[in-house]
Length: 105
Image 1 (tube, rainbow, N blue to C red):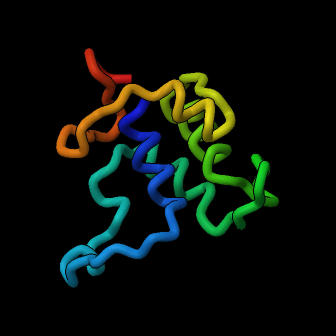
Image 2: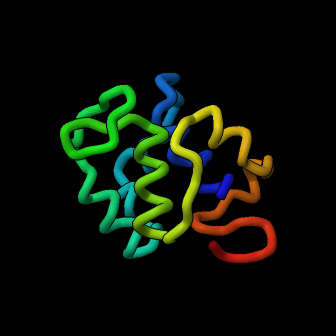
């Protein structure tokens, strides 16, 4: 759970990072599973809304909750604090989409 959660929550981080020209020209959805890609595309352009969990507006933890529920059929906590508490800490170099320690979601 922690791997994908870290990636999704990092999208909510307002800190701008230096990105190489090669990275900005690539499709960010290129290397993810079809199910995940489809679900992300459904939520594209939905505005941010604190506490939201509908197409009218959704927040970051709501987005994580929806992705896990719809793509991986896993229940995760709804709030960011409870998500953080539930996560197993994983070194950055070991992050992979949809994997947790001990196997696939």
